[in-house]
Image 1 (cartoon, rainbow, N blue to C red):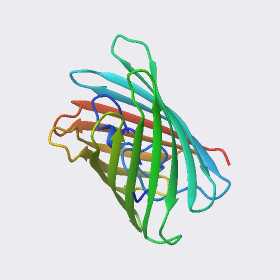
Image 2 (cartoon, rainbow, N blue to C red; image 1 turned 30 degrees about the horizontal axis):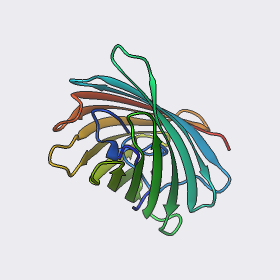
Image 3 (tube, helix red, strand yellow; image 1 turned 180 degrees about the vertical axis):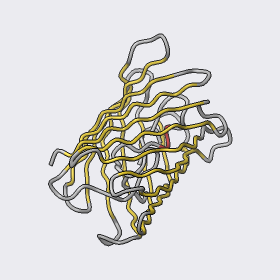
Length: 229
């Protein structure tokens, strides 16, 4: 969803389905997992998305996530975007609540997130709910999302996202992700990605995507995450 996140806790505007975004997760780029920060800890993050196609666009998404308890986290983030030849413009600001519903420290995890975004100008308000199921075993991790979005003045949309990754070392991994919509003329994307922990408190995720149907011809995503406590 443009504003994303039923079972969840863990990316793009314009040419991508807004319905499949994930801002706060360390594990994937387009896909949410049920991982939340521990109580009293949190992250600040920033994402840069470059979408190239009939209408090229660059998007910046700054935000923060805070663990209220080990099962509840609150998030806020904003969207700024620019088309080729134009200046960056503010699109929306959103608040989200993420809930871990599964037992702690299990290979199988699930949760849910609810988000409300307030749009600016031509961008209306947006309500989004996402469900996430995740599974981890040894060096492998996988996650799947069911996404629902209701934009102001528009009909409801359902979407999906899924991904799998493998750790090469304790701090470096590679993976494949896919996101899209169940709508007849929706936008979808598949990407290959690198996920790295570059320090005790800093993560960098980067991916290159390709259109499946009516999504962008090409897309590049970079996420920076910093743990501040």
